[in-house]
Image (cartoon, rainbow, N blue to C red):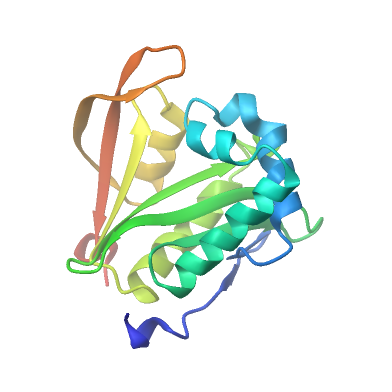
Length: 191
């Protein structure tokens, strides 16, 4: 455990969004977010879609993420619109290696809110959070080779392509896809 991370921020406010730690009672909202976007995200987050089939599953998932936060295993956030106070997305720092320290960031936004610059707003702040709050030295982002919007977003917030992981991911249909690997270091970020 890293005592220096006990008091990190649990909420990040941007002009249009509030990105905050998932907490007890968020399960039904999280389930609704997954259910409304399951066709849209199932190719990218099949395990998550399968794990959150009901509001109760959503609450169990949220509580597990909260426990992992407290144990410094990973950090999961929901994204809410400030004006409507509805959950519209998810951001997750996962696969944390405290030795380096490095983490992978994954995310998705409700399909009705894609293409409006909201995720760019959120990701810019989450990258800052990774280096200033979590004190990471490197942040990794993986996208499917055909996920062009995510690749544009990665580049927009400073990530650089590091390579491709061939046949790294299998879609539910059985098709094997390459995964594009992006990285951003503390030095590149300008810390």
